[in-house]
Amino acid sequence: MSVLDDRQPFTEPWQAQVFALTVHLHEQGVFSWPEWAEALSAEVRSPDAAPDGSDYYEHWTAALQAILAAKGVAADAAVADVAAAWERAAEATPHGMPIELANDPEAR
Image (cartoon, rainbow, N blue to C red; front, side):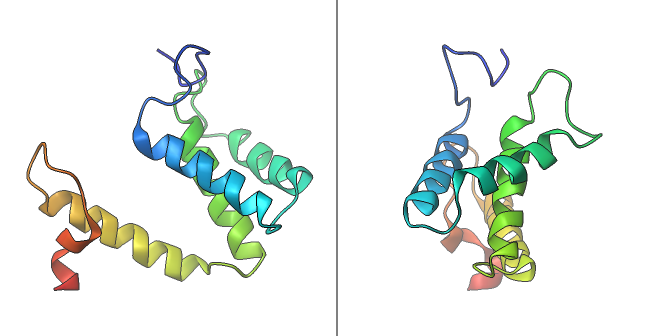
């Protein structure tokens, strides 16, 4: 099923979370909808985008990261550090258990 299927807009919880975060940041005045549309459009038009849209929320996340960096809200390096910490936490979390940032072995 494509992530763009009207019956199931989010196939993973993180997709709903990044969507909600984007809406919240817009409501807080961090960026306008035209700015968001431009950032997202640039990402989904990238040559590596999946033809079926299955990577839509990966592009959504990249667009959010780009706009936050452009606005000076979150530097690319800081975002990369947090993303790496989540990846380490995911690798350290037993299967079936919730992934928590506290599981990052480098945070201990």
